[in-house]
Amino acid sequence: MGWMVNRGVGVRGGKMSAVRLIAVVACILLLATVLLSAVLIAAHVGHNHDHHGLAGVCTVCARVAVAERLLKLLVAAAIGAAVVLGGLAAMGFAAWAVGTWAVRATPIGVKVRLNH
Image 1 (tube, rainbow, N blue to C red):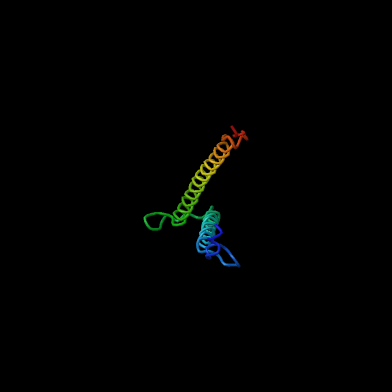
Image 2: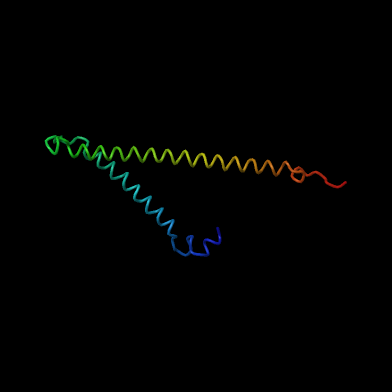
């Protein structure tokens, strides 16, 4: 990875790479979405229902329902990401363990004298 830093892809001297910048912006937007959805739901918990609007639908109830669905979707995505990352970590650990065992299983790994 050292060659990437020298080409300006990594963080060096206060510069931020484009990929890292996109990740930071995505995290900030995700956090803002979650917080604003929670604030909307908390602010309109005990509102007066106005079911005399368009087609008898309360606009506040509709917006709260959308915010609730958004939060449920984000929770499902976070659980899926955790499962995938956990699986990748388990596979990485298994590959490391097999690689470590394979090195020890060679004659040199177990320090066998190889002179005839």
